[in-house]
Image (cartoon, rainbow, N blue to C red; front, side, top):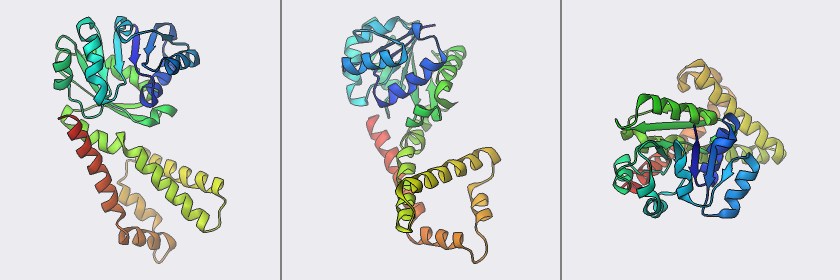
Length: 262
């Protein structure tokens, strides 16, 4: 099985670095319009850099790590050369399978939405596909992407929501960690130490949600002692509108994803 990727930027590079650790790099092809970046990626991972997008089309599974606004140009180049045997996996935010097929009618597509946590093998990735993709092919795509973290198959109608929650979500979490660290510095903790405490606290808290299966509100109540320090902080967050701000942020990202698909 050959795996290819068009684009080795932040997201494509993160996914393919994880894939290169699990699969034989001799069978992995990459290309990038930024030739220096693509060659540097190939040198780092052992994958093979090829000169053009068409050269990647010999792969069985081909990732499109291309921003939505550039997809049309890429398909102008490759659409007529795509083999019906290949599975094309697009990670372009907001772009529906129907739209992808309008650019390349003979191609068969899986749509995916990963997140930047693929860089450390902790991505949350969603996949959607139509009936022209077999279950075996979809299972193989899941297996490939499991190299970078957790993967789930979802109906395509949920992909814009996935984009808002897990695709954009890491940026919101990073902002929360930064704010927690700023508060720690304000209270006297050295900056470097503050980031460690804030980040590990978020990491451990997320692990508790996933491993215990308990509702986040139940876990929150476990920490809130009567007349204690935590309930004071919770009251301050409620007063300052934390929930509204987070809901608005995810909804804004969702709405942008919807608009990109139009």
